[in-house]
Image (tube, rainbow, N blue to C red):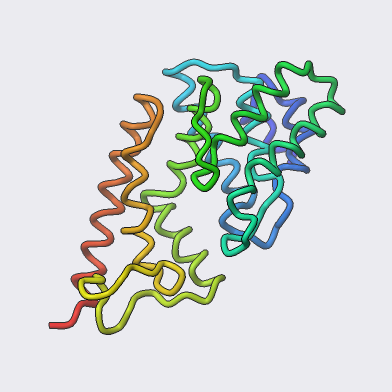
Length: 219
């Protein structure tokens, strides 16, 4: 992990402490170290325009998935709150002031789509946008099918892939997840920079859905 530390400059020391703790389930390829690094890349791109406290964003990014709850768990909506509580414990051991811990915890709690917590700070808005960018576009499509495979879902419904005559069910069909969630994400971005990046990825996501439905829909 030492080779990754320069990416977090000027907070390499903080990253050195937090990287080993940043995700608790190495088997979940949708919420692993690669996801953390992609979100951080998005954070940096947005922060360069929108501002924000880089130290808080470093900590919040590294710890936003430090407690990973499975997608099909009844506790899924609590995942970001659990991660926030764990992050507070970790940052207390680092000697952080209570106010900065609270700001970091809020960013972590508000990043989650499931939690439905409005982001009230620049840092929270940036982290939410950065995390949601990873759910759309090429990487978002890859993650969608990866998660569907882990959960035992099918790619699409054989008789009605477009769900024209049935209810959408993204617990059974990966393609349905585009209409239940992915294609709605770009409308909810919090920063202007994030929204611009999201629109590019939204187009990629929509084009993919149109293409796969054209290939698999009955004649």
